[in-house]
Amino acid sequence: MYKITCDYCFEDNFFSELEMRPVVCANCNSPVNHLEIKDLDEIPNLEIEGQNKKQLDGLTLISEKTKALIEIPHSEITVLGRQNVGGEVFADIPQISREHCKIEYLDGNYVLTDLDSLNGTFIGQAKRDCRKRIQVKIKDNDVIYLGKEAFIVRLKYRTLKDDEAILMHEIHDELKIRKFKCRACGKIHNLNLIICDACGSYGQVEALDD
Image (tube, rainbow, N blue to C red; front, side):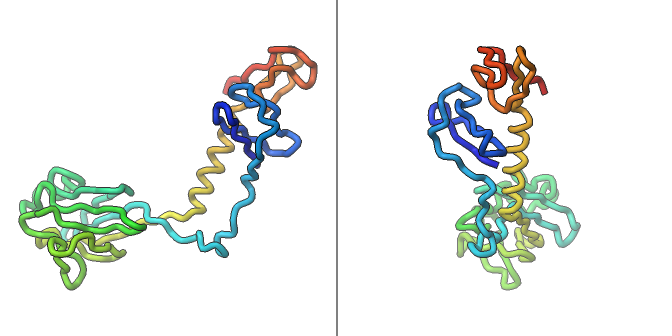
């Protein structure tokens, strides 16, 4: 799979074979035959370059007492409390403040900080006080105490290979959408050509319906 990015409208033009390299942009018809081709199949060796490391993709808190789940999607900052994330679980726990603590994504880790809650936020078996020590790193299977209520942490991950799969799916969807047909001769094109390269007709190539 190959790609050329138009230097006029910045639209990506995808094609599967080098012989199918576009002459003009499918979006704006500007010349693109002078632009650099990017080979999307040249994927780096993830094992060699160490890029197969897992990336955090959210976390789940499990109430030790009731086993209720609080699903927290990946975000730069998440505030927990009775009037914030987890409110449906915290609603009947008065010792948990409306804005009790926050979870931040910093330098590839989730960290925990108390927000001046009435009963405090603690983490781990040693119950480190998150009021005295801000931005305490959260590890998988840690126990977070909101006041005296304990919640077990389950970290969620995704790998770079997941991102590659999403990218390739988007590319194939793009290729599927971008089909054009010459009204004069009926030839199917991958590009919105001004002049049909099969019959030479001008202005007869149009997009096919999905």
